[in-house]
Length: 325
Image (tube, rainbow, N blue to C red; front, side):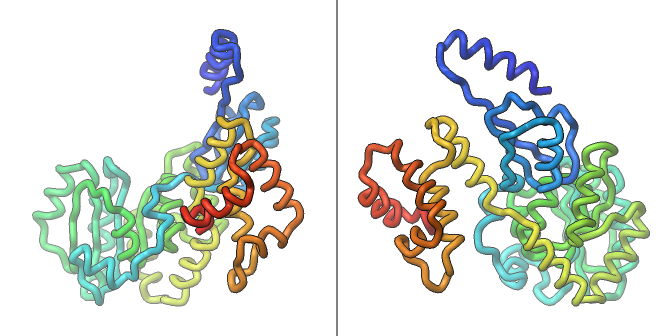
């Protein structure tokens, strides 16, 4: 509920005798509780167009759809599967199925791993299981003999590498993991969801055609096996995932929050970045991009007007610092 912090903001503004900005960052993909949305906020950041419509339905006017915030590793240039597998010590020639349930693991993880391993027995595949902090499950899995190549890990901090090394991800319908997988073009097979908000994440995955839901371990196993035999389907889902992803969301949200603090709608860095994206990539020059759209030029001029640095000098400095890269 945002009523308590928003009420605190009202009190704080009276005490400080100045405006206090308040922004909401919605972290579900397909659906969200109405309490996420309050028309009193200065900015409401949402990850999908579906939630942008929800926010406007509840009367929020300052809705911005940049995507779900992700760690920087998921917005950088990715490694090839071969290099990622080599770095992690995995077999470089095997189809790789990544199974994870989040930092704490999830209830049916062991059953899912068992079903998938039996289904892929004798195939050129390997399973990589991330147990998170569930040490009991990790030890049980490590103690068993498996009919396929098996790598069992506990809690890891380089999940991006494991995703880059994989062909398919099996996970519960948490929005963060889904968004991370999409950023890396990794098809997802959802193995469960929490009733309520996570159901919307399942709908989003299906709508974007980047994966499916398997409600039982055996269904998950047969689906994975089918996908690994159909490379065209995997390529299509990977392409769809990349198209749906918004890996730069964290930077864009941070830029706008800085703009709120500084009393402007957007930072100059953000405007320059958008200008570059609008300009043809084969013919990118700063002034060429500026001339590509009058509205963008006006926006840039208005934004830079709050700065004490002369326009030309700031642009030169920005290019040297790489802010338009």
